[in-house]
View 1 (cartoon, one colour):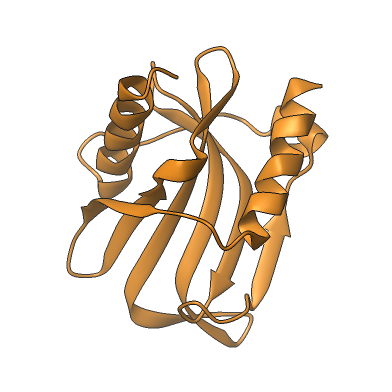
View 2 (cartoon, rainbow, N blue to C red; view 1 turned 180 degrees about the vertical axis):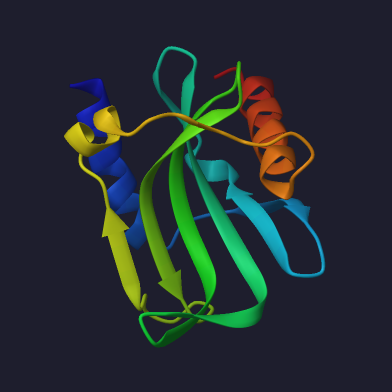
Length: 137
């Protein structure tokens, strides 16, 4: 029930304009930021964290160009594992060219994936968990 409520709020937050993005990792190809205003803790030792990846180069998804991804993920900080809840792809702040959503059942069935040590994703996960803990969540 708690997970369903958190995922429903995650979908609403994707459409909400109020957010504060803090860069947490990046290189010459992309920058990863988190929305510090929407870090929540829907279950014990799991955070719902919104990531924005701004790509330096335009990519194509099903023939449509995008250079930004907004991803809501459940993150387990103890082992830096995550599950993807939603993904929006767009050209900057334009309307999304693709929106993918997982319901609570899909997320529950999804295996936990681990961020590989030393990658930008790993750095972003570590920084996100540090910020969530610093906020007392």
